[in-house]
Image 1 (cartoon, rainbow, N blue to C red):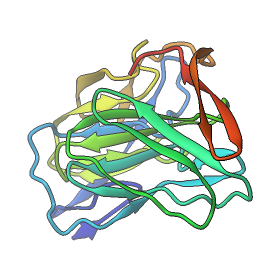
Image 2: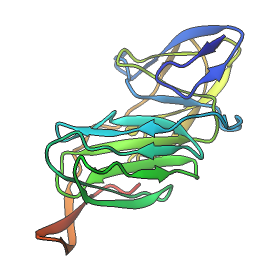
Image 3: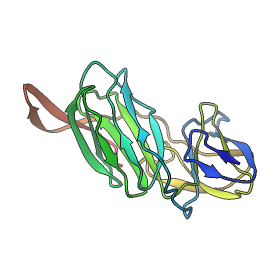
Image 4: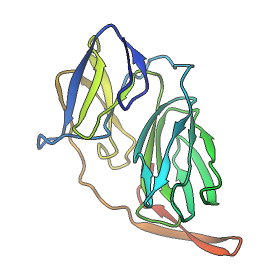
Length: 208
């Protein structure tokens, strides 16, 4: 039986639904459940992280190692996407809807994204080491193989750095302790010019 629920696609004889909750019993959307030693699915397709209403869409994108992500801009203004993450450092300089840059992610891990122009824009790409990875929906639910007994769980609020994961036994409900949500501060460290537009570079204060 093939399935793909907000996740990298996998194959299993049987599946079950599980929930990821925080310590208050509230559902945790966009938690990633993954198996570290799973194989890469070579048939995986191009993934897309759009920019709409000055936000990344989706705010958390699950891909697997070696996949390519396209970054269209569906706003009527230009964006400047960048990442200083150790997993993948890149910069997509100021562009509008006429350009759709592609970026290849060859290393597993967490990639924190921001826009140089709009401080409220923050996104994450979780690069799974293989095809066995699943992402919870808005109700904190995910469908996983029925045979899975242990896996790792990642969420940006699991650690201050936003990069750490925890290994847990798989049960119907998985409870994880989340750090308080803190809006990142901006740090100015230089300026550059792009055509007739002068930009001041800002970055989230947290390191990823």
